[in-house]
Length: 417
Image (cartoon, rainbow, N blue to C red):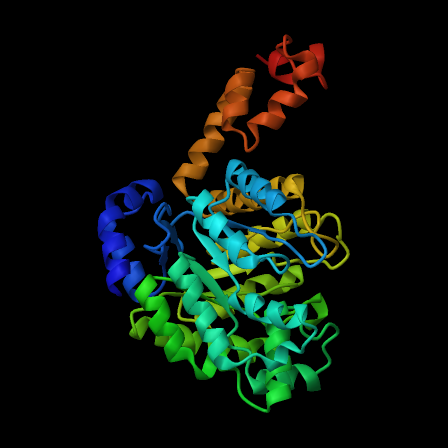
């Protein structure tokens, strides 16, 4: 355990134990064996330490950030506030347009939530803006960017260390419908083929570990070869990457750094259990950070709903950290309302899984809302439900009535009382 992590844990252990409903010893042993990670870079002075890894509570992440087409920093700050108010536990800045350094610094100043980034975006942007091939980036530039963002206070970083030359070749030679859908994964694949060299994030992994250990930056080992179509799920390229990520997570633990694993993308419903359990096994129970998974590929505009279906199953079978999807997924940059909808959808998945896992806090919340329903106590119902604001708004026209506006005097609760 690195010094920064040790200090963070000792200063917050009792609070974490209370928040998570776990014994302090369970948390300490989980961090030591790599089945849990504790987010919190000491350079992010206001950061709220956040524990990830079951049986700690399931956590939700919200992705925000600019694009080359939409570069409005004020919109991103509004989305940051919307994500916080909706109840997300962490945020990732995935900005690719505008002044990325300024946007990142401002987010770190304005939020107490752990902030994640993808450092290769900042390096690639410099080349794309000057109409040069991002494959021209140097290894030193990439390492310097990781170090710079760690110094600024970034708490976790997606680093696609498992996109190896062998894995890229398997993706090229296989029957993938959608090739590489990860931006970071495609940038690295392009770099490797152009430079006839191995992934610099892999060859310089010890350098990454040194940086991350110093600042307690959690390595989020990226799924650069995740399936982008359901029919690609479980192919050789995907599992080649997972095997490498499992090995790298082990190296991180031995060197005092923290690591979690990303995956798996688009996965048909009947394969989610085997994918999640397989990844947890191969990666020695490192925390698993999932996007979706999406069990269908036709839900554009409703991918936050499709993602909730997949994420609920994934969490039940062992995923620890749910990255939201919004109604904008696959279509455009999300707005504030998309962010709100995405966070709430992922919180539904987390709560649903925790009920099935028998987590007492989730069960007790269900009991409270059911008691309030039995008593037609709309104030208590609003408090206990996921979105109190929405409950109150939908009741506005009939707030003075005891019954809901669907049933009125046909209210089953009153008729059976």
